[in-house]
Image (cartoon, rainbow, N blue to C red):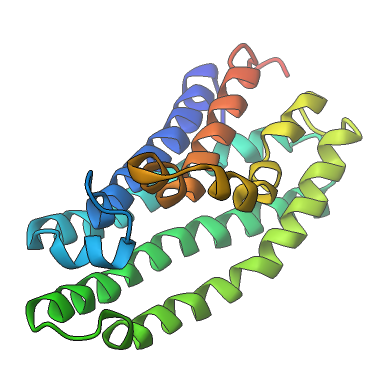
Length: 220
């Protein structure tokens, strides 16, 4: 599917751009330099920020899915089964990224109504929050399967990635998310933890793009 260096590199850059766009969408939802309560922050953002954040999910998902073409290329030397599992899992997870982010609109709007009418914000946003959590439950088993197959294939040198690519796979930083959360505070915590899932994908696609930068699909 990738026929030359230009499209190989472009696919990687698209993945990076997808992460940066959705990270920006996260910040549009709940960044506030003076507050660290995400729901309360969302209750005070403008209508425009909520609309732009919702739109960011659409464009980010398109770029993320384009980025999967680079992963498909890297797994062309793996078995057909392994390659298909990895690609299907990545497509499923990255699509879920956009859907779950879009579902945050309900939480943001509920938060705004709670602030506007002086209601209990936890109660008002409870249903939207539970629905968002339910969506995430479908992603975890897919991520577990992806992690096992991706790490196994890369570590056994069945792909075009060198072994060190394993350390940039999202599972590694994801496992340290809780520890990192304990050491951060204030605005930096909102930025890092609020956009964490997209940050780790930016890291992944950046590493993938760098490690495959000089590959030539015409000769590999």
